[in-house]
Length: 243
Image 1 (cartoon, rainbow, N blue to C red):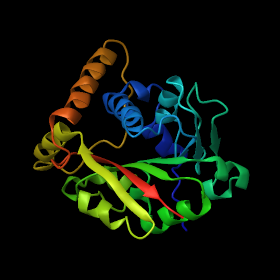
Image 2: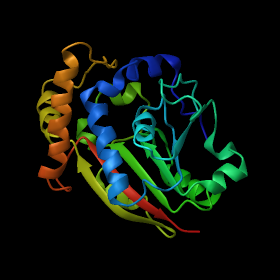
Image 3: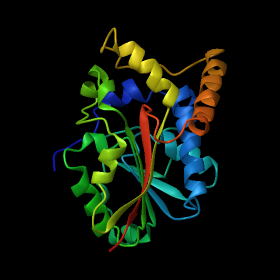
Image 4: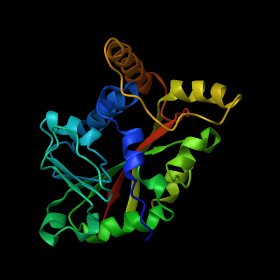
């Protein structure tokens, strides 16, 4: 399997210090934590594969969720994640004792970087023998494709139908829904005029943090106000794994 890890330049561009205060990360962290709690996974032993600098991991740890992360690339963990992230590490090369302890696997915005995501999921099922649940997020809707997807090495943006194709045999799709519905509407308008966007994300500072928190609250409400089938810029899904 080809190396899909980010370069240091990509980590710096997309995950600068303070990125957890950006409206997109701030809202996603909270939606993920609530999703785990709703499905009673927040008290299981959790591993996040492809955790980057630990944006989600840091939030989960701050809410007493027992989790660790593994990152194939050379990422500098965010403060608060020290000792909880293994970098330059292939998840499948973890000691058997570690792999056997994991009950829930997380992958947030990882599958889109894989040419054969179904094979990767099946490999998780086989090598993490006691993991029964897989929670993922992916960028959604191919019509939103821009240079940002190309810069980050995406193979595709997903639809709900695409998520169903990942589930077969011992892998079952239990739940999948779009989120960031209002952003989808804004992006569709933006793409009518341009498919070029900045490949760098700026962390907010000063009064900008308050603006981003407001944006986060809007997106969190957005998740509950729109039905899950209504298009959004992302998908969150729960898959069950059986051996």
